[in-house]
Length: 494
Image (tube, rainbow, N blue to C red; front, side, top):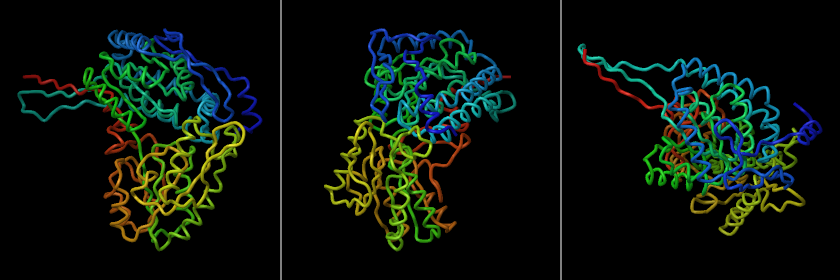
């Protein structure tokens, strides 16, 4: 691991790609408009980024459709696509420190998390998916002897991908790796709050041998570039990670256009349940702190609702506060810092608004409180709120910040009911040393993912996604390929 001094020196010399990547080259937006990329730790301008709109999306889709029809990538042998993507993974690994630094400067993630999680996981996702693509077989249906029923997979066509700012490189890779491996062309619209790593990645894709037009990266705002992509009549599928509110809008746009499939990984309000038979309270408290304070709480699966059995609630909260104290916001380039700034002032203001609403609705600030940074940077205050109930705004709505709502329960049935009392169903965590209870509760929770005696663990082999208001479909694992391929049935009369 580099030192703070070394990362700071690298930051002084880094350059950014800030134009749209369309058909194998960087281009300014057709309108000439830009938006600023701001370092949230210093509030300094990094670069002005091309702000794209409908004409730019049109150009990217035209390029993507042209190369898809030409078959340079879509009809390439799976082994050839694997070769290019493995080379791209190697290039990403060679530039690992550069990508770690880009997202830290652009979004505020700690450099320690970028080097330990985001970049390695992005490389793993790309490599694993590339390796699997020439191992996906078709099927033969069990028809009568006089017929042959073939079931084959084919790329969807042009895929639109809209990715968030909280894990800029990693979330993009969860879309790009399976979409490209399956033979599709992709138009990626990264978040306007963190576009720089995706633009740099596109350049590496060219160097790896990806044909021009297969990958296009078009930065811009959701209400302009994102809307244009979702409404486009020549986009065959749309993959999105972001808020539930925007997910609903994208589904409407699909209905207003060509009924493109829309795959959603949306919001979350993940419950953590700690039972009295959890023998290691220290480990559970450490896990609960990490579940809400990691990445400043800007995590879709953040464990933002904590339910503790009343018989152990008081000692658990004391342990929780000790671990919360280890998350002190600071310079994200310092490898020792565990919490950086929020992505921008608007997000910091949102967190403060929710903390104030919790106070107004009767919650007790057990740790932290309102964030009032001194000097530059949008640094939050890790906050724990007790005496909460299900009707409170901070319990019902996704905050996307380091704010934890804590409540008690008496019975297993009550805990399950509290956990399921939400429009969301993305992640959940259960802490117990009772094996039967672990299986029973994990099965009863309405969530796409459940961790037992942990939170957030996983790798590319495990699917990631939710139910209810948290979306549909899955990222990662072989199941991700379902989103980016069409099944074709061929019935042959013998």
